[in-house]
Amino acid sequence: MPSSPTAGFDRRLFLTSLLGAGAAAVGLSGCAESSAATGSEGASAAPLADKVPAGTKLKIASYQGVQQLQFKLAKLPELPFTVSSWLNIGAGPDVINAFRAKSLDLANNAGIPPIQAHFQGFDAKIVAIDITRKPNYLFATKPGSDIRTVADFRGRKLAFSQGQAQGVVLLRALKQAGLKYDDVKLVPLTSNQFLTALQSGQVDVAPLANNQSPAYLKQYGSKGARTIDTDVVDLLNLLWAPVSVLNDSAKAAAVAAYIPQWAKGQVWQYEHPDVWNEEFYVKTQNLSLEQAKGITALANKPLFPPRWDEAIKWEQETADLLAEGGFVKRFDVSSLFDHRFESLAAKAVPEEYQR
Image (cartoon, rainbow, N blue to C red; front, side, top):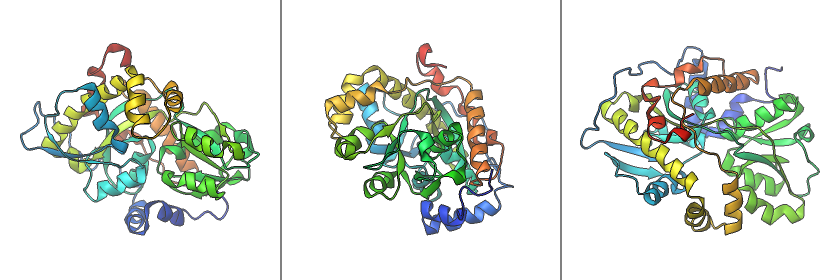
């Protein structure tokens, strides 16, 4: 396989376009040293405290207010620490930048952002895992497109975010279809640019989240836009935090206290689809109830494994796939997992969600 993802593809320019010049400058200097970085230098192995010390605060990501709404609707107990800010942030590159700026302590992402952070030389650890068995993303075409299968992606312009879940879903779909990186044209974008890029014809295809596609098709389906389903999954829905946060015993205890609430909130949402459709999709996302039901029908049952073996294997496969294209250097992903937190999510939920 070629050492670069596509002909004439400049990885430095690619990274700059994704992260912004300032962050990329830091990240690229880290890339030069990434073969030595393990993501675990200075990481604490101290046992977690039984109680969260008084006065402890965390800054937590809650994209579109999902976590607060889950906690409110599920009537979960009050957290034993102060959330000094809930940040409406979800995209992996944005999370990494917020971690670097110390404006964020804990985030919810897919498996690829921790790999990207490691490549940039930033130390962070995964502290909780939710396994995703069904696809969360599908591929949408621009209006008027004749693309109907992944095999038709050959020679086309594809929206690609190196540091986000959508990126690995695309790479896995290409591999499954037998397409190499230089068989397509990868266009560096972040996921919040995908819809605009599709609408304007800047790209032929972009991976969209299941909850984005109904509105897109409603607007452009009559103009020839369509979606392409695959069985490619992004296996990991995870919580992760900077090593500097986890080395603080008080903040580490707060993270440990948050994980059970996070798991319970997801279980509650899964078990109460009618309420969630009305309170989230209809009231906050401006979708129709019919659209909301369509999204919920595709929802994954949350699964919190007591052991992370499968997650580590999948994360290694993902890192190796990125390395094949020259996006990152090869490394052992086991360094990304903080096993002190391994069983906390599973212990917080009923047995049927522990797998």
